[in-house]
Image (cartoon, rainbow, N blue to C red; front, side):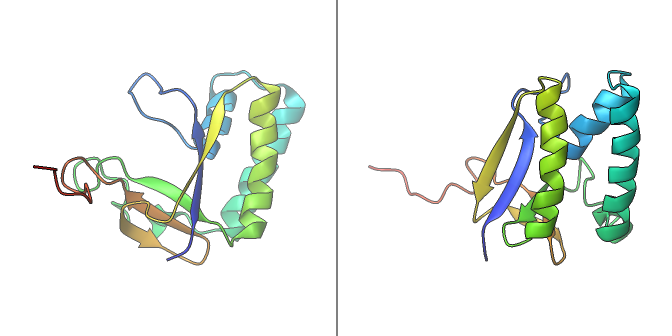
Length: 137
């Protein structure tokens, strides 16, 4: 398995979750915080992304189900350079609006519930179930 990248909020939302880059950008729009030019850009960018990349829920409807797949998150495959390049414009939008975000990298995002050419959805490892080390005695 290769490397995976996730861009997410640097601070949790009101529900204690760390939304991803697209959720944060759409949140700015939904809260009425974007000017007209940014709203138009986001509408076009989202349409292009939806046309170019599969929404995992259209293939695995319950991939984000809170009971079946608690904490499931999307991760980009590091070799998906076109998707990562497209995402950079969303990160620029967040930067312009002072929305703190961070990039996470891993080779093991968790239990995979969806995978395609450019992305995975994974349920994160939980402690202590997935702790790889034995306790010292």
